[in-house]
Every structure is written in structure tokens, then in C-alpha cells.
Length: 178
Image (cartoon, rainbow, N blue to C red; front, side, top):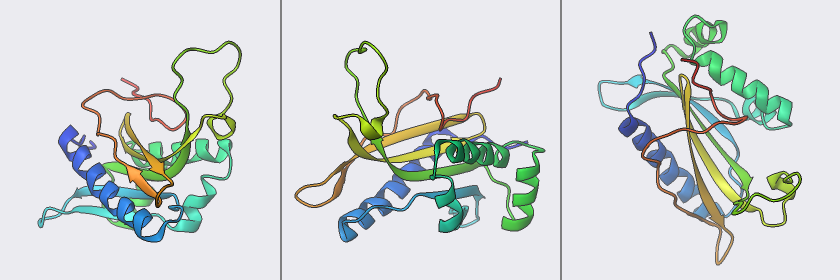
């Protein structure tokens, strides 16, 4: 049985990754490459076991909508007891995954009123904003936090708070199957 992470543990993970990526963006002023980090149980020293997937492997997941669907299948497989993906990964990374952290830049649009007709994709919407997306995926639950990327006076992040509860749905969310 996969241990479910407590909300406070997920917040701690999020905050740690936010700080690292925020420093990277401020120091380098450049785009942050997407990454997936497989998280295992805590070690005796209190740090989580972790394995960052290779850059080339992860970049393939961001080539198209169908490749993003494949990424979600991969993540769900890692976090599903008895799934072939989980069994294979455990033999390679030598620990049991309890979460996957997804970090990538994306476009976001805030819609205040439901418009008539079809809403354009965020990447082509005239009021889009660039964001850093950090999602903590656990079995059956995905917790996203979007941090606005501010381009001036230098490229930096505007921090958003980790949610106090709830979840989200959509193409980049693991669905609760209970």
C-alpha cells in the first residue's frame, strides 16, 4: 500500500522546490526547463528520497497534448500499486514512489466572466500570463500552485500560497478514483 502524504508534507516539498526554482530564475533570467522528480519516503536524516528524471526524457512529455497525456499515464503508473510502471521504476530507482513533483513554465489566463463561444487556449489568448507551475502528484490527487513570472525589472516569480485544501481536475491532474 502506498503511504499518502500529509498536506503539510506536500506544502514543505512545494516550498522547497519553489525556493530553488525562484533562485534559478532570478539568477539566470532564463526559462526553467520542465522537470519531474520522483519522491520516496524520508531518509533517517529527514530528507526525502528523490530521483530527477533526465531532461531529454521529460522534454518529450511537453512536445504535444498527446505527449502530456502520456506523461499523466506515466505519473499515474508510478503511483499505482501493482502497475507495471511502478514495478519497473522501483527496480531502477531503488525506492517506492509516494509522489511526483512536476515543475514547468506554462501560460495561464484568468477568466472573470464566462465568455460566449469557445475560450482560446492560454498559449494564444491575448490576456495570457506566464507562470511557473508546481504540481505535487500523489495517488489520486494532484495539488497545483501557479506562480506568476514577472518579466520586469528582471525575470522573477511572484509567489502564490500553497492551497489549504481541495484539488483540481483537467489534463494534468490525477483523478481520485475512490
